[in-house]
Image: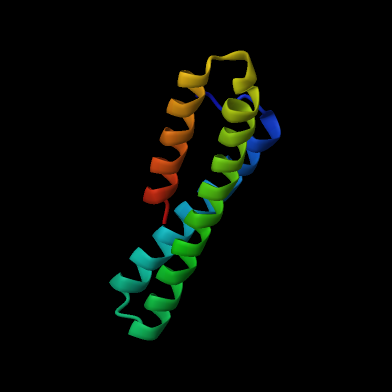
Length: 92
């Protein structure tokens, strides 16, 4: 599946850039021997941000693939549903 919707793509890119900045911040905190509590707090924020980005993507996946699945046969829809459930099982 490709992310076709520009708004979703832009939202994901924005979230991923923020996450990238958070990860760099944690790397800097480690280099500076910052307090463990602060580092754990930032790692928790990163996990939450990744989960949020995953949900945005999964929502678009469900909308694009599953809602448009009425044009496909039942077996193909079941494969798409199984794929989505497997992806959700791996989501943070």
